[in-house]
Image 1 (cartoon, one colour):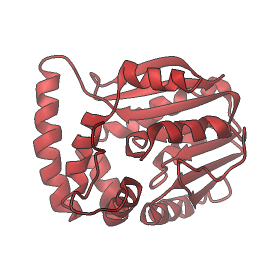
Image 2 (cartoon, rainbow, N blue to C red; image 1 turned 90 degrees about the horizontal axis):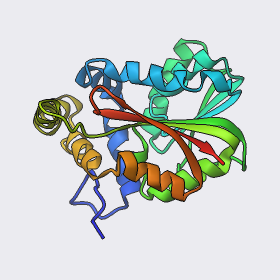
Image 3 (cartoon, rainbow, N blue to C red; image 1 turned 90 degrees about the vertical axis):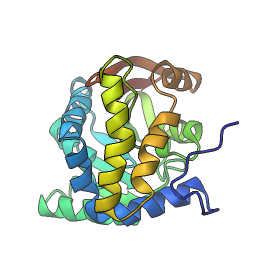
Length: 243
C-alpha cells in the first residue's frame, strides 16, 4: 500500500492534523495565492460547478472543506435557504467568516469547525453538497465520501471540483513544468510555508482522478451522472447522486 502524501514529512502526526496545520499556516495568503497562481481560472470553475445544481434548486447545502468560503459564497446564486460550510482549519474558517461578514451574508452562510470524515449533521439533512479542491486532502477518502452520502438526502447531488492531470501535448508538459516547478517556488516564497505548495502537486499526482474516482463513488452507491474536464483536464467536476 502506498504511503499517504502528507505536507510535513518530518512530523509523525496524522495527515488530517498536518493538513489542518498547513492551511492554518497559509490562511492569511490563501485567497491571494489561489487566484494568482490559477490566473483566476479557479473562479470560473466554481461558477460552472455551482451552475450544475441550478435545476435542482437545493434549499439546504453543505460545502465540505469550505476553506475561506469561496464555494459557499458562489452557491448563494442558487437562492438557498441556508448554506453550511465545514473545515478542519480554524485559520481558514476565520478568513471565511470575515468575508461573509463583509458581504452581510451571515444569515445565509454558517461556517463551523468540522471533520469531513465525521460530519456534524444528521442523516439525510442536505439537498446538495459541494466540495472544491478538498477531497484529495481527506485522510480516508472513502470514509469522507461515505459521510457526505450519509448526510445527503436520497436523490440529492454532490458536486466535487478537484484537480486532475491533463493528458495531451503540449498542455501536459506545460502543466507539469508549472505545477511542479513554478507554482511551488512562488507559493512557498509568498506563503512562507515551504511544504504547502510542494504538497499540492504531490497530492494531485496521488489522487485517483477520472474513471478511478468515478469507480470509488459508484462503489459507495453514488450514481455518477457525469465528469466534466476543465481547461484541458487541469481540473474535473464530478456530479454524483445519492441513490
